Image 1: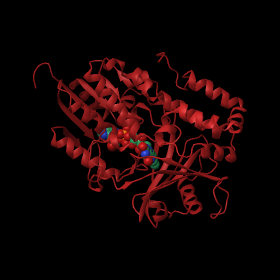
Image 2 (image 1 turned 45 degrees about the vertical axis):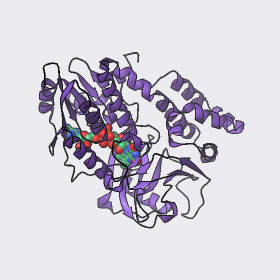
Image 3 (image 1 turned 90 degrees about the vertical axis):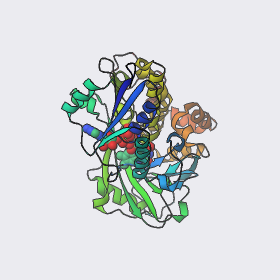
Image 4 (image 1 turned 30 degrees about the vertical axis):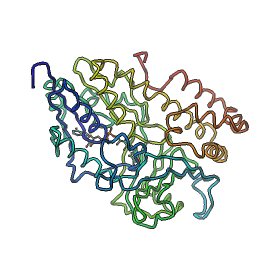
Length: 401
Ligand SMILES: Cc1cc2nc3c(=O)[nH]c(=O)nc-3n(C[C@H](O)[C@H](O)[C@H](O)COP(=O)(O)OP(=O)(O)OC[C@H]3O[C@@H](n4cnc5c(N)ncnc54)[C@H](O)[C@@H]3O)c2cc1C
């Protein structure tokens, strides 16, 4: 290390932390990168649906050995009248979305292989122990750059006693099950059934799948596991063993003021779930986390890291906008037939289109004037349109970002 070089610590070695370590390790100005991860990579449990919708973002060859076990064509949305229906009831509509760079993964394997690759390129890993608030203070003191990728709520906000700054989350459950998934192995299924959220069955092979359910709205069941079991019965996927079900939360992005993703006096940056950026509509957070980490390291390379909060918000803005509108189609109308019509209008688009291209989605809907008119007949929907295009989110932004 020469005197002009800096040191970097990454707290949290999941997808966002690994992406940050990858970028930092490539910067000539950074002499060393250390990743602090509380779990061991060999034992790590994954609380996630394991769909990586843009696998190009992960710097590994897309092989089963690296955890990319099912190269999917896309996803099928299946819209039902509600949860109170016989198991054989047909969906109101189905809609096929394309996703060429998409995989259902063994996420543990992806992260282990990614960490191994980084270790072989000189990144130091300190695993198997949680960073405590005291150690956090030492890390902040010791390193020139600190990237907090510890999830929501982040260690940074915990240390500052500010976890209440996060404005919201979603709850999701998942498990890996065995069964016969040959009918839809290349087109994983997402089941919309009247509540704000969805169930899923994401095959990893013809014989096993990641299944789960999540709630993005305020109404949540009293018994989450029973709700997953009922969803399995209705939607024809195997009921997971109770002791294999994970429950976890996902940020309802944007769930944190972007200004709180950067602490200039300490040179601490928050990425991924820690920065509260997962998609508030469909709960996707892997690609978002990796993109935020890449953005940050690009800005550090350019010597412009103070622009991170604004740049992060700009990166995510169209996604926040679209997610807010998509939620509105449910929350404001509570009409499965209308949702089915919207889903049919989106048939053939890509996951990327329906995640971060509001103009493409709006163009599709406007082509069917009756649906557009029905959507806009509600005052709440008009307000959402106004809010999302004036960037009015629920966190109290004092930064003006
Ligand atoms: C049930 C469920 C299904 C989901 N399905 C999908 C999906 O299919 N596709 C998708 O894109 N997204 C999905 N998500 C969202 C996705 O899992 C997250 O957005 C993503 O994991 C965020 O990655 P991250 O690296 O930012 O944070 P995390 O994955 O939360 O990683 C944080 C890391 O920090 C470590 N850590 C935390 N505290 C400390 C500490 N004090 N010291 C050291 N280490 C620490 C943790 O061990 C962990 O490894 C799902 C989420 C859930 C709950």
